[in-house]
Length: 417
Ligand SMILES: Nc1nc2c(c(=O)[nH]1)N[C@H]1C(S)=C(S)[C@@H](COP(=O)(O)O)O[C@H]1N2
Ligand SMILES: [Mo]
Image (cartoon, rainbow, N blue to C red; front, side, top):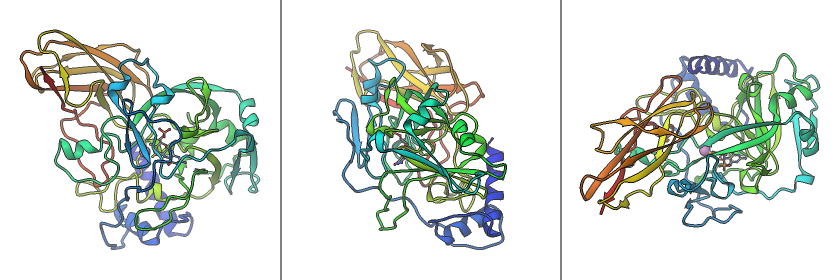
């Protein structure tokens, strides 16, 4: 999967050089940098472009009670401790929000989806209203949506590294039951041609302007046709309710197991292209940059990594003189989480946690363990998940400048009092 995405990206870059791929809104020097990194013969300046923190007001419609959320610029992170009294799915009112700009309030009756581009049999495009989508065979699927930068602050607090971007702890994830139409059905209805290679959904939220004033246009990111035809939904319901404003009302993409940016909210149009496509969200952002990575960055990121989180506040106080049932959740983008090991002595001894859900792909598992603090004072709780693909959480995550895909075992501090 990773290799084929690398190979695909190299081919896409060669095609761009030959004038056969489009990169509207991506500076030419960024394309040259990527090309150089992919093995092209061109020398280009290194170290261009890191994302800027959004500095506008939150622009989130739903209430953000302090018990449930930490507000970070235009985004709101779910407090993991607040999930302890919830079920398998994240309640909509506690689901994290990641907005590049602000939530647009869209009336479902006025909404249409235009599918267009030279990868269709009729390039002038086809329009779908919400009723049209609902007439297609509905699919219901549980899947997490997790930001590529989830856990980013741990690069700094646990590994001493400097990274750019929103300083999430572990709460930039939520799991919901999504219902909608298959993107594959919509694309086939629109008249997919055999020449189609990339699909680019675009949001109806305002243009994203970086802190240095560059307007990158509306949020959009190409998806290879193979994934688009596989398991992607155009979702109109979340946990049995119409999609809420902040999560993409009336329709969003849900791209199971891929980084959150793939799941474009408030989708208004989808370009189907016979040529490979680029946007800032698969060139400057959402690749791995830094010393341990190719000079111009890795291939565009696709699947999420493995992570675990305790449903406890950071630095929680726990009574020293009794046993506690501690809970948490683990997930992976590469397969079902089949095993979770925990350590309450800072990583010397490990034992298995009890799993409370059937392991499933695209989903998280809840787990628990019992612990009686051996003595008052500071302790660290560790959890390490392993998935059905054999991936497990390492001790250290290889850093990247933008702090994506943190997957190391987290040392969660608590205090026995
Ligand atoms: N149109 C649009 N889609 C978007 C975004 C956005 O800002 N605009 N943010 C993306 C990112 S980075 C993430 S992590 C997820 C977050 O989904 P949520 O806000 O429903 O939790 O939406 C993605 N889809
Ligand atoms: Mo994200």
